[in-house]
Image (cartoon, rainbow, N blue to C red):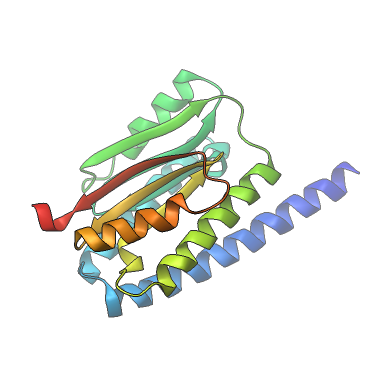
Length: 191
């Protein structure tokens, strides 16, 4: 039974990894066509993400599985759960290591990591919101990064105008399964 569970777990993780890779590749193509940000900025974010994940994997492989790392314009957001304050400190210090990191948002909870079912529910909610953003006119969906962790939605990005910001937030708040929203969206029109 344990072997069957492990086989299922690794298959599930491989499928998620493949889907995540496909989503990332398609979002990079979309970024080239639609994003106000430069391809160089997007590439820097990707490099920061890879560097942080690789460092976490080398320190303790479970860190890379238990912590979601999101990077947008040099800002890093950390989500997930770890059992000790020391673990969280290690992850946060690691996130600051790449040269181009300008800010780290630490949303890591002190608790044992979530089970696979809770994680898959969160992934479905995030995917649903990303799809709605992509299909909604006047929203540059590639300018937003969405993460859901145990019913809390975290969003990073840049709103072009108040209408876009309102449309994004309306989609988020209308989504079932969201208990709380934490926004790190910058409003480029107010700068």
